[in-house]
Length: 377
Image 1 (cartoon, rainbow, N blue to C red):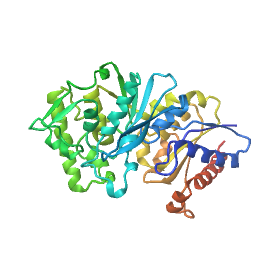
Image 2 (image 1 turned 90 degrees about the vertical axis):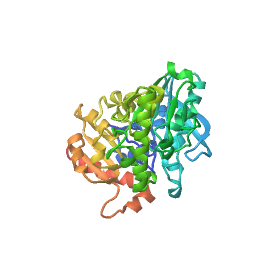
Image 3 (image 1 turned 45 degrees about the vertical axis):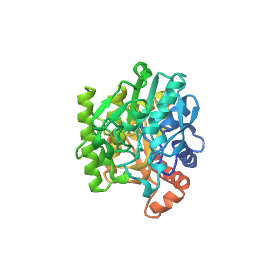
């Protein structure tokens, strides 16, 4: 029996590779003679860098950049197996996990360090880049990122605006004359995990601001700031980003990358599944196991587990979905190709217990799910 194990990271608990190893232990409890193939995946969020680079080259570079609050931090970027394509994960430089709960404040957090990572990749000669957007702590529409690459975002007194989402309200002019000229010969692909637009009830601030530390009043301020940024972008650059699907990803970083760097947005799960060669691994597979920290109705919006399930179902391969928890609407995922769904948290295991020992409980959840799935094989 061949079992393909293709989870994404369990945010805050396990990397995709760690999750794959825990799942493998559970699979061997039920099918001790199975041939296991680990193919960690991602969808543009946390873990995209590791999933892409580990699967193709294991080539990482260390970098010292400014973090979301302006202090120097250590970050990484990588290179795909083709030797020419760089991978930058925004969360490495401005991720939510880089801050304590008390430090989270999208009014002032900045994407400047992401621009510094892009510059390092340019300095190394790379002219194609994947930029993963998930997990950011920011809401500045990539303004900091653009400034790190030479763009001038000026207030009414022709002075550079401050860093952070709130400062966008002071933006009067965008000048791209000094932006790094190498960007014109660089293909930049935004690896997005959401389709949210920039502003409004489903926009960057309203949807993701609260988890980044924004109060209701802050959300209103940030939404207005991004709307103002969009109007200045359209006037000075000639690009309309207001209704761009994915433009609201990472606090508007999706829209900013399109406007400032000429990037194009693509959906992360499919990019990663293609890059790691998932389809080839599915040949002759008998079972596929995928999962993430929480499986719920949002997973259906082309998150990595659903992308995996759909590809497996197209080949009539049964799919086990495992998760830290099964959230609202999880039963709807059966329509997306899942055969069995199994959560780490249960009547006998609290969510706190699952988080305290995620590997062990993920192994147990996998074994439980496979025993149920085995009856349909």
